[in-house]
Image (tube, rainbow, N blue to C red; front, top):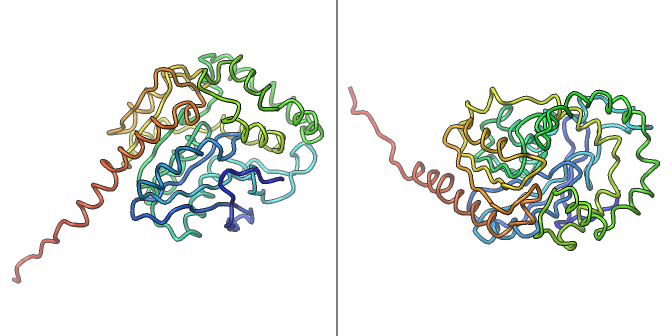
Length: 322
């Protein structure tokens, strides 16, 4: 797959199942590192203005391509229509483990996890499976479980999904890639985005170009298997046990992940904060990059680094000898 990264991936690690994971680290500041997790079908283009702001504030930024996306691979050949893959090869649990293995390879003990869209499910799963590695959670325009159930507030789609699953598991999307490439030009993509209201007037052709180019490269047979795993993902019962500080960033015009989902997530995670963007939609990181970056920098300063500094400066109490 061609690499159209905004942040070229100059590091690689073999995951425990053999998958090649590509990532990079930008910045060497003293504050908590931030690992950015992309959405389904998405490239790292959604962090183009947010990541550098965090680096400037002293936070090293880790950009990793999700398996099956960008420069990251898969544990085995997907074969025709993705039939060579097992469900566990692209499950939310496996993907969550990938990002912890990236941290291990980068020599990072704990990081704040920022996830967009599907990336929200991933970072919540990281918190469930590896709580000690999570300094903070920053979910952006995404749900914490089954995205089909709440998609556009149309619950009936979840009931129809099994029919679509039977159909699409036999569609050789990889053979359609030349057609997909011709129909995912940035100009056409922008018209579609506005037509289905996934993004508002602040979305520009320039901003979505990395995503559109990436969509022309990914194997949708693989990504459909991944979506089926996301549909079976459930974490609502887990959210009240999260102890890491959490900042929910949400758009009131988000059609894909309705505001009610964002509110529920913030209510279920103890002590979570939520920042609303009245004109923001599902593409919030490129619709409101300055506001998102400001909120993240402020949150990390108040809830993560300041608390860590206070803990480190607290003297240990010693008991008098008996």
